[in-house]
Length: 193
Image (cartoon, rainbow, N blue to C red):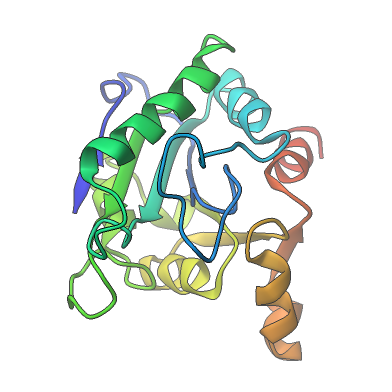
């Protein structure tokens, strides 16, 4: 597991929320997001992070980045993408608290690649958080499985692979999911009811 930590742990307790990156914060691609230029925020996602921060939440990101293992980009390129993301968030005078990423491929048998819960456990350790009190927002079944394995709550957004996830889900799973159009609509629901 690898982490990029834009800030230090909060000195006061805060409600933690964990976001998947590709498909939740930025546009996703089956061909991978391989460069800073390809990293494009989903409309409203940066504002949503700012609203969470302004409401007192701690915001962490848990993201699979197997493009590193596949040789599509390197860690420095990933860091540059995250600097771009953090700079967009900083325009609202707030910052992302923690970024955890898995650089491994699906056959590397690591403990961090979602649907395993290693990234969420890493984040929980950093914040000394009880994952049963944490919500993860994602767009794939593997995000949900990671949240379930960690004992966290889960919200599915329709952006990214969300619509595909819904189309592939059976009716019993659909009845269990908390579904929102995008990150901003979920955050507005969360904060405004």
